Image (cartoon, rainbow, N blue to C red; front, side, top):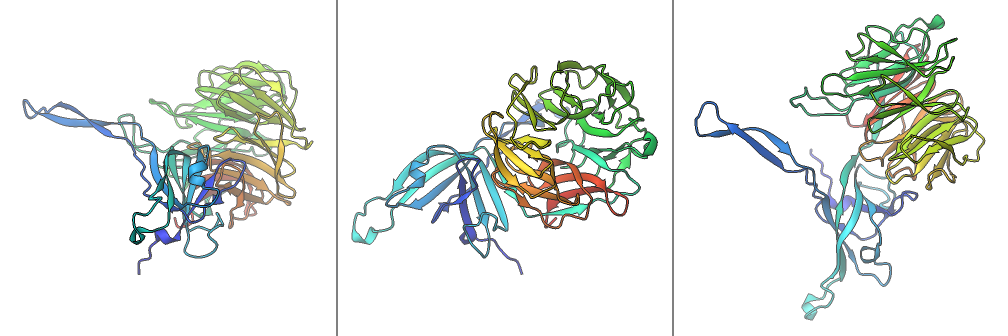
Length: 485
């Protein structure tokens, strides 16, 4: 028998500041959610078989417009939120068949309406004409919003691989439709993983790649790194070929840092030397527009403006072991061991020391959400938060020992986030934030593992995580996906 979600099971929540979780708005009705996807304009050419006639040769898709919905709520003696809310907010609707309506984690399915803002407000039928027309007075508002995101409950499924090494990083190309440049590509379909080395720096599979969403991972034809681990991986999409870039993540005597570039899906690789400092290696990178910034184990930062083919030095004075880097527009952040943070306000062209978190711990991870809130994770399993560009930090989350190895927000909206946490005993767990980092919820059912090193978010409901060897001596590669899928 079919079952239906009804509007009587719906509940509206709002979030006025990303430092605070969603709040339930009592006794509220929501009108139709409309999400324009953009007009498709037909482009015509002469019909080669019929003189004087034309045929549609293709379409140009316009930019999507703002979404819209309306809110209705009874007039109250005070706190008439629809009339008085001063600023844009994040809207959310939960549908759930039973349980507490006020619990924003109690839902079967939910939708987020990002950057909701009021365009009209009013009071409907405030005075009755006759006693027959007497009814409740309602306040109302029309809302537009930037984008809509559906949230599902998640499960984590381990990908089957054999005879591997620990994995340090993972990267996927975005979803795309078929066009004149190439075939369609599904969500989380084409990706690569960077691995550790075997004893003696002999690789069994320095890089793994997939073209079917992680159902199969195969080794690159040639191992790019013959002397050390791969710390970070990256794919740059171009119209003529995808560019794979991997960074060596361990020191070599008398050798400077280097990356390896392939334009044929890993069949051949070219080595590119980065700088001239012996035993230096790349620990992390970040993209800023078309530029790549890469940081090292001894506090250097390099920049490439040509897809990794050449590199210039932009920072050499810190001396700290940089661990992660992230950008928010022209504001850049790089975190390091021993509680050091460096920032840039000019798109990475220069860097300066910022405030520490005050923890004294090694900083391992960083990410910035849509409103510029910075989150930093430590090797003591603490998460710190800054709203002022790393001038000050506030303790945000304490997971009670272990380490927060990785954190990021969905690149599509920078609102939904994931983090990878290794607890006591190096058992990895995954958390998701559904409210811009205000709170974090542990995912249940994460497969057995011995540590999670990194992840990649494909969208709010799909992500990949990689880590150390499991007890069966194979690499931990796992996909987070909707529980019904």
